[in-house]
Image (cartoon, rainbow, N blue to C red):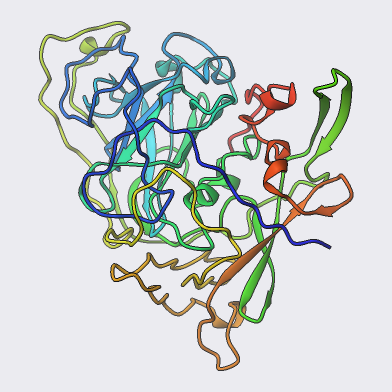
Length: 434
């Protein structure tokens, strides 16, 4: 049995430089905005229901954006490179989501990410009725992102619109979930927390949390989930080891010699659930969300003459959550290897996810994590206190069982946005959002 040291390369993300707090490496996107986007997040902006802007903001229960097709009805799998931004408020030169489209929202704020899950009639956003959707992220088949030039910001960390390097969004005709990863440490990089290669597993597996039927609108703090597909297996000398789930598929790879070679990647047995579901707390509910803009102003292709008045409903938020001031320069490269350094994470019982994973101290030291909810199920030192939490991942594959994953093998890890390099482009259209 071999232990893998999975190292990720720099993500190709187009975004703007953060203007305020410093963050761990891999959290803040750098560079310039996509050509379709405003230079910075802006609100209000003039209504343009034909806009091709691709800048999302994830700020509160009634101030967030989604990606969906520019025309329709169409499938997410057919339009993933060209999706456009649709926002609950008139912002970012994006299209505005008409009132009544969103039928439920849960807004979660954690120490490592902001996550929004919800329901609605997304045929109003050009998604074909019955489409089981797909997964969008800043990588894509070419590294330019799905959609190309798509960017995400949030002000949830420090009150400033920060450009986020790692994010993922799942959407189908009636459900969505989106996560922007706002923190990292030596065990959990932003790329791991927003791992984007489980496109067929659905929202409740990749972004676990408390999912509701339509009609619930709430803002909560929440514990931090383990990265998608990670399962703690053992703790040895204070180091927690993980098994890592990878989607199963087979295909044909044509090498430099022009000869086709069959390959098999991933696990033959698909887990039924993530390791745990994080617990929410400090929830604040509201009856609905609304921007107050007349539906007649938001018909297909409608263009306004001036920014409308912004209405705010249901924006009351939870307390706590992600905090800024972490050490480390802003960078679009990934964080340290999962086997290196000391993390302050303290996992809780299987019903509680990881709570809390503390941000790095502003002074440069590792911040201390709080006591786990259930110390009997958490790694402890011989003295019974919280052990330094370091992770080592074990990669599973049907090629010889457990195998190591050097950087050169990264192209073989499954996922919607890696298959082009293997000569097999996965459409993502078969995603089942739970």
